Length: 564
Image (cartoon, rainbow, N blue to C red; front, top):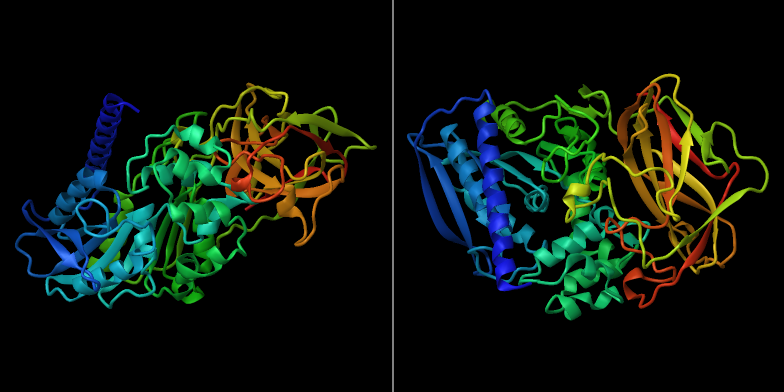
C-alpha cells in the first residue's frame, strides 16, 4: 500500500466515523427522552492502574447537578472519538455523566496493547475508582462489540453502584465466534487481527486469508509474529487447553456469576450471534429473570442487510434502547422483569417470546433427490451426486451471518441462479401451499463420501420467492473430521454421516415460495478454505482437489423446526 493509498483509506475511515457519529446524534434527537439541560463540563486525565500504567480517561458531567447517574465505556478504538463526543454531549444534556476510557496500549493510554487479557484488571480498577466518586450516584455500563467485551470481562465483579449493563453484538463464548466444525471464521478474526495488530499491517486481506501455511502469515505478510493470533488459529477444538483455561474460560463462566441485570442486543446477521445466544443461556436463572434480550435484523455495524424489500420496523440503532434501559434502572431505580423480543423475518414485525431458544411444535424433513428436488420422502435406490471441489477456487461468500471484514456480504441477499458453479449443487422444493413458520435451529444431515483424507461440506438454505429470486436464510459448514468420533480417522472412500448446523432463526417462508438448499464445500472468506488434507488447517502447506459424493436416501435431508 502506497502512502497515498494509506492516506485515502484513513480519510475514508474518518469520514465513516463522522457519519456514524451524526447518525447517533439523529437517534438521540428522535428519542422521546428530553434533554434536561444544555451545558456540561469535560475533563480529561490519566487514571493510574494498580501496576502504575496510566489510562487516558474522558469524563462528561452535566452542569448544575452535584450527583447524577453515570454511564461508562472502555474502548480500544481511537477512531471512535467522534462517536464518544456525541455520547458525552447528548447524555450530559439528559442528566447523565459519561466516562470513556482508552484501553491499555490504545489511543492516548500507556502500556502495551494485548487484546482482551488486560480488560478485567483494568476494568475493575476503573469501576472501583468511579464507584468512589461522590458525584457518581449510580453507574451503568454499555458498549457494542469489543466495548461489550470490556463489560462482560468484569460483569461478575462490579462494585455496588453498578446497577445494570447494556452489552450489544457480543457473546462470551469466544470459541463459538472463532470456529465452526474446526474451520476458522477468517472474515471475523483474521480481518480483526490485521486491523488491531498493534502496528500498521499493509498486506492484502484476501491474500492473507489464503496464505499457506497460514501459521506463517503474520511474520511473512504482517510485519511480525502475533502470539495471540497463533493461539486462535491452532486451537481448533473446544476441548483444547487454550479455550479451557485462562481468560476465555473465565469469560465463558462470567454470565453464570453475574448478578446485575443485563440487556443483550443481538442480530440474526451479526457474527457474534451464536456466542451471544450461548451467553443468554449461561446467565444464572435468578438473574435472567431481570434481563432483556432483543434480536433484530442488521449487521454488526447496525446497518440494514435485507435485499428483498422495504422493511418498516427494523429498529436498528442502540440509542433508544440505551435511554429506555438506563432511565428505568438508574433514574427510576426499577428492577426490570425478563423480556425477550425478536424480529420475525418476512413478517416485518417484533414479537415477545416467553423463552429462548424458541420451542417448535414439530419438525419437517425434506429429502434430497437425484433430480435436484426436495421431497417429503427419501430418495429411492443407491443414488448419488458427485462434484469436484478445488480449494484453489473456493465459492465466494455472499449472504452470510459470520462476516465482519467484508461486512456488505452480511445479511439476506439475492443469490445466484441454481447450480451457478459446478461445485454448487442446488435442491429446490415445490411451492409451499401455506406459510411455513420456521422457529429455531435448522439442520442438514448428509451421507457423503470423498477421496480426500478430510474435507468440508457447506449448506446454504434459501427462500425462493414466487417470482424466482432466491434469498439466503442461513449458512453452515462442517468437516468430516469434526463429525467423527474422538480418536477415529476417516478412510478415503468410506461413506460417513456429517451434520451441518445453523444458528437459530425466526423466519416465515411464505405461501407460494420454494425452499432451496445449495450444497458445496467452501464459503470463503467467511470460513477458512479446507485443503482436503487432514490435521490443523493453519499448518497445511498444500491443497489438492477432491471428488465429493452426496449419497441420497434416508440419511440426506433438511430438517426444519416448525411453529412457535
